[in-house]
Amino acid sequence: MSGRTPALTPPDSALAPVRHPDAPAPGEPIGSHYEHCFGCGGEQPHGLHLAAKAGEGVSVTAEFLVRPEHQGAPGLAHGGLLATALDDTLGALNWLLRVISVTGRLETDYLRPVPVGSVLHLSAEVTAVDGRKIYATAEGRLNAPDGPVAVRADALFVEVKVEHFTENGRPEEIRAAMDDPDQIRRVRAFEVNP
Ligand SMILES: CCCCCCCCCCCCCC(=O)SCCNC(=O)CCNC(=O)[C@H](O)C(C)(C)COP(=O)(O)OP(=O)(O)OC[C@H]1O[C@@H](n2cnc3c(N)ncnc32)[C@H](O)[C@@H]1OP(=O)(O)O
Image 1: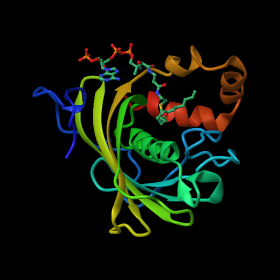
Image 2: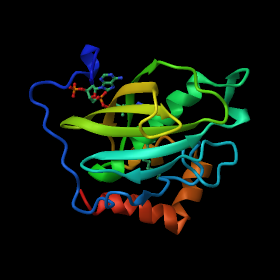
Image 3: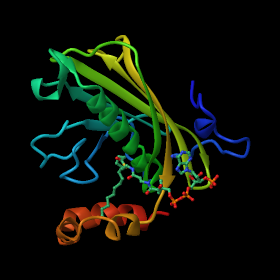
Image 4: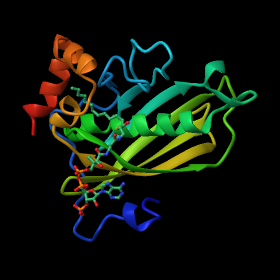
């Protein structure tokens, strides 16, 4: 079920999502979009270290080990972090569409508490595309891909140009990103495959 509020309901004109021909193959790991990303960056010591993989169609999966530093209540994951995990998993869908998009709206349901030590098995898929608007849904299951659903979300991502980052990000980090050949390669992957 996707889009329970009007803003998250695709209009009749929306199209089915199309997997880009150069998208990673199903099962292939999707690298981080930015090494310092709180959600998926390997260089971010305080981050969630989400590891996403491409799925079938326009979908991804990811895993997130809930550690003590992720607590909100004793022994339980913080709700905002769980929303972050859903958001970042949804962000990985960019690699399947080969567009750069950012979260415009994220609506989250918390269905079960998530204990520290759990592995959250996340999955996300694009449900529809309408111009720059990308409608998507995600869920997180406890301890197994078919475990009980603990969190779920509906989201609207909006396609942006790379200038969204270069014109709004703090200059220090933008300069460092531009000087990093790996980062440039990641961005180019989107730019040369419109
Ligand atoms: C160099 C480094 C590169 C790194 C690559 C990183 C990859 C990314 C990784 C991702 C990491 C993980 C993810 C993250 O953490 S992404 C980080 C969190 N997100 C943001 O920071 C985004 C902040 N927001 C904005 O920049 C703008 O508001 C955006 C770009 C979203 C739209 O402003 P823009 O001026 O461009 O467009 P528009 O206002 O004409 O709107 C266009 C259409 O969209 C509709 N709409 C908009 N908002 C909403 C809403 N809330 N509910 C419902 N609808 C909404 C709007 O009605 C319109 O529809 P229509 O009238 O056309 O029908």
